[in-house]
Image 1 (tube, rainbow, N blue to C red):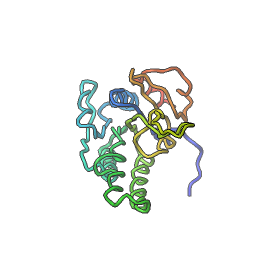
Image 2 (image 1 turned 90 degrees about the vertical axis):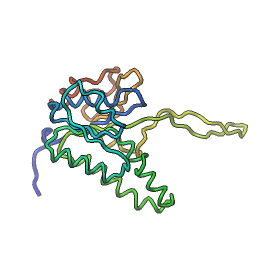
Image 3 (image 1 turned 180 degrees about the vertical axis):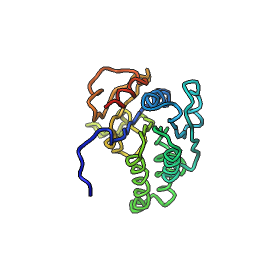
Image 4 (image 1 turned 60 degrees about the horizontal axis):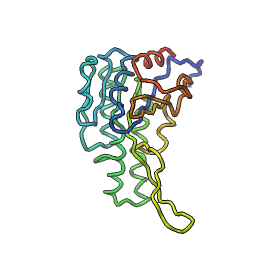
Length: 220
């Protein structure tokens, strides 16, 4: 085992961008990536029906199109392919399908029967996907969809009503804690942070994610 001094340059960034449909996740991820590396060293893994190609005017970035089944193994294969091709930034757009898409974890669980013990077959596969992100030799930017969450609430009279509980990321709970920075996008495309190990953005006013944000993170 080697003991060494802590050195920031040894660490690769793990950045998450979460938002509802239309909030600008893909566009923001690409701008952010362009601040971390030249366009030819950026690769986006596209699960969003070709949305990655909509912004080709930004620069000559690379695309891996991932279609169903959205199994953890296929995501891992795409990440490894981008690494082996010499990419410096990989955008996974989005991780939602690995969890809630055709062939994803929840779909697989349902096909196994949906019993609690079936998680023992699904969870290790999901963990390998997360580890592929965390242990990657390149910067990783993930996007994830958000949707309105609801709960059944019983009032003092015993009547049950549906209550909105805010927006919830469509992936397995806890992924945010693995990230260097987690950005939340509103419908006006402005970002706030829900997790920030760099202390650069936490508790700051809303801002646009641009290439300059990527350059700032790269300079750490």
